[in-house]
Image (cartoon, rainbow, N blue to C red; front, side, top):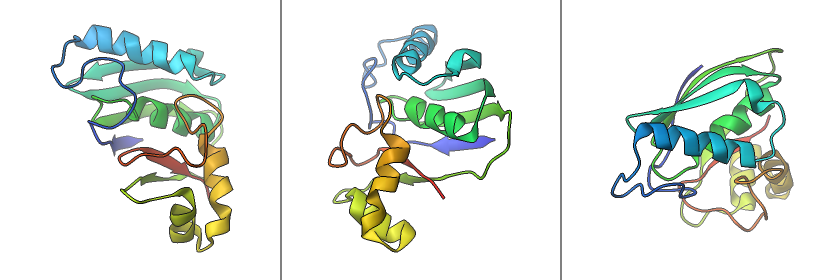
Length: 151
């Protein structure tokens, strides 16, 4: 559990993050709807609330992987500057690392940096791709996006 920081201006736009034209109830509802659209299974026991630009994620997840995907999906939304993790996991597993994409990064560059082998980029892609708003292509990453980096 903890607080994960995200780039507030980066990510999928669910509301007008610049002018703040959504109250926290609307933002919370939009984040829940967004999470439901990801196609992640087992999120029925997870709740999201927005408080001062940060998302507070609570509930129970069946796996560490699901928990991490939820945190990344919620955090990679424009207007969210951080995600407070209050999710419990049924079975404890090793935690993934998280990586914030920088200008000029590719999955191969990231793979070389974290694994020492650029050819393992597909491992990162697979850990982040199955669901919207995760990766749809290894070539579609953007600065500020946070990726799960599996062990």
